[in-house]
Amino acid sequence: MFKKDSFFYFLLPASCLLFLVILGLHKHSDLYKLFFLKAELGIMENLQAICLAVTLIFSIKKLKIICHKTKDRKIWIFSVLVFLGLFYILGEEISWGQHYFQWSSGKIFSELNIQNETNLHNISSWFNEKPRAIFEITIFLMCFFIPLFIDKNKRIAKYIKTKKLTIYIPNKKICFTVLIIIVTEILEDSVDIRKFGVYLRLSEVEELFVYYFMFLYIRDFYCKLNRN
Image (cartoon, rainbow, N blue to C red; front, side, top):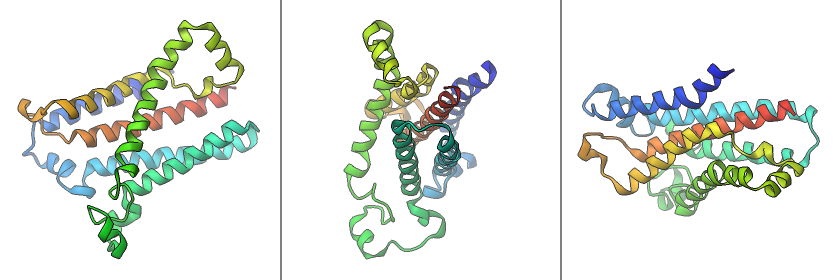
């Protein structure tokens, strides 16, 4: 169990980050071009879509199982919201299939969408940057501040246990992936990493790890549910 956890929580994200940094040092390589210069059909974009698709399939599979395992309304609502959220994010990520089937966007999306794609997140920041910022703040609070309060305050810990809310609190091991997201966000806003010879689209790197966080969190959620 330890080795399996080490792989998902530390080895895989650390190896992925190291690989991307090394790749960013070789911007003229063919592999770099395949990852980052193929627009929406590049390996990086497809990795994000695959990560979301795997998480969505996993959540659907587990949703069928909890049908017979629990009647807790909170878990049901949460599971349905997770499914709908993942379905929406995956659809937006691949422009609902436009990236692969190459259909035209139509008049409405052509006029409103800055990238002429069939999606909402390129129409307004309310469908993109703002929800993402809220989500990232939420995972930061869930992974760092809430566990700290639980450890320091017995009353809060008792309340969370009484209300059966511990299942929603992320495993502390996920903090490594969250730390990568935070550092990437800070670097994107404050440092031009090209000065150091690293040519990476940090927003794409951050997005990949956000989606990986979703996979880890949902995997943990259903593992806890199975143990209860």
